[in-house]
Length: 215
Ligand code: DX5
Ligand code: ZN
Image 1 (cartoon, helix red, strand yellow):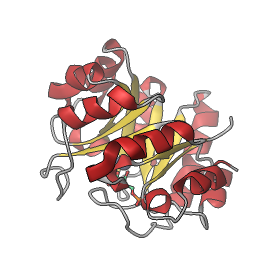
Image 2: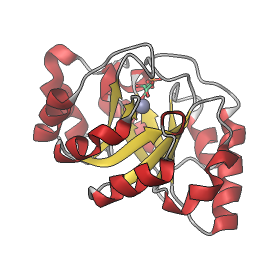
Image 3: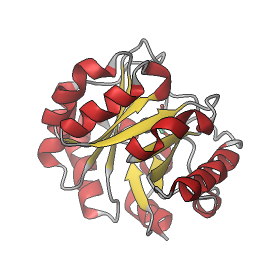
């Protein structure tokens, strides 16, 4: 599978969001990664429905919505209506994960599960076939611009083995601290979706950086 690149809007210039959306539209990026934070599941608040809808209004590529919120079940339909194509919930926030994944699919979206750095991949074994995307957090969620956690490589390799064993290949996304130094190794270890926030938007030429991450 040719890997996807999903720039994280969290690192965009919110005072000029439309221009960063156009930049992603015109680049080689595949998806918009949209980070929703509630200040409860993670120690930060980002944005909610009005901003997701505003992004969707101008985005010409799918929205990959990463919910870092407690009780995501309550909001699935609203995020689907706001334009999400992928809805990713956190394993740690979902006591009834199987039900949550079913609800996401019933809302017409791809169902993703994110796992925090301390969460072992094998905990997904019994819902594996229900999952369209696994988001391996390579930082503790909540903020852009943090340093990559090295154990992520190990988790990606384990996921590749589980995918082979189960004969089911979800997207394997890596989120946090992805940069031009580590992305190739991440792909070699089995990632096929790269989320990149500060690496893209803090670079002098975001379009070129996206292109570099695609190669
Ligand atoms: C972190 C978010 C990430 C964040 C990544 O909690 O889920 O998507 O935007 O930012 P960088 O690429 O700067 O680590
Ligand atoms: Zn994210």
